[in-house]
Image (cartoon, rainbow, N blue to C red; front, side):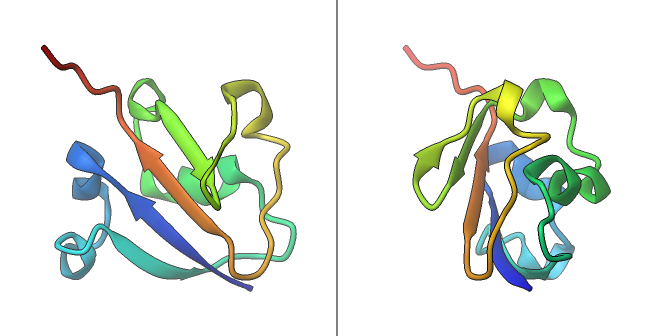
Length: 84
């Protein structure tokens, strides 16, 4: 199945070089893949996987290993962001 995978801010560096400018890519994943399974091949440091949204809805850390994705879902991830 196909999803859209988006990495924002400094996490964009973990996307393939040709996808970094748009910060997103279409991604083929196994049916029933979990958020954790999708993230794993990208070697994202878990301390930087802060805000995770599926179709605009927050997924708390304790649900990321069990929350499965469906065809057409949009998985978006942001690192912790400081402001002031």
